[in-house]
Length: 179
Image (cartoon, rainbow, N blue to C red; front, side, top):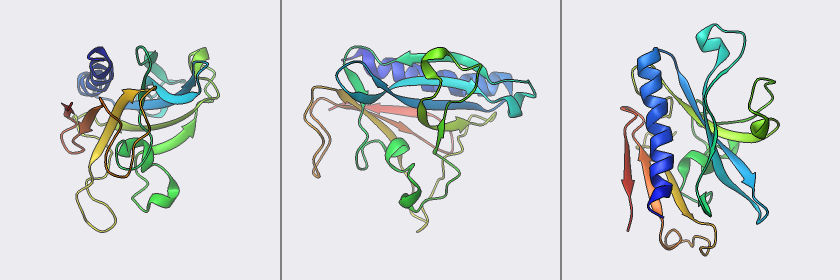
C-alpha cells in the first residue's frame, strides 16, 4: 500500500508546483470510479481552467489518474474533509471544496459526465480551501486513503491500514500520516 499515498501526494504536489511555475490556478479534482466492485472515489485529475488561462478550453495537466490497486479515498465523516465537507449542508464557506460535473468536450473521455469534488492551488502556492469554519475554528483539510476491502470507518476512527494526506490551506503543503 506504500505506493498509493505516493501517487495521490505526487498529484497534489504537481498541482501546487504547476500553479507556481505557470502563475495560474490549478484545480485538483476527485472523481468517483466504478471498477466493477462498486463506485468509489479513486480518480484524480489536474486542470488549468480556461477562464484562468484565457484559452478557449480547460488545459488538462493530468488526464485522470486512477489510484493503484484497490485503494480508494474514504468519503465519510472527518476522515476526508475535502470530500465530506463539500456538501451544501456542511455550513462552511462554499469557496472550496466545490462539486461539479465534468461537461467539457475537451475533458478526457473517461472523465466526461462524471461528478467531481475539487479545490485549487493559487499561483502563490496557497489553496482556496477556507482556513476557518463558520464558527472561526481552524479548518483541517485531509484525504484518507484505504483499501477498498477494509471495513468502513467507525465513529471512533478510520478503517485499518489507512494513510491520511493533510493539506495546509495557507501554504498548500502536504503531510502524510500512516499508523
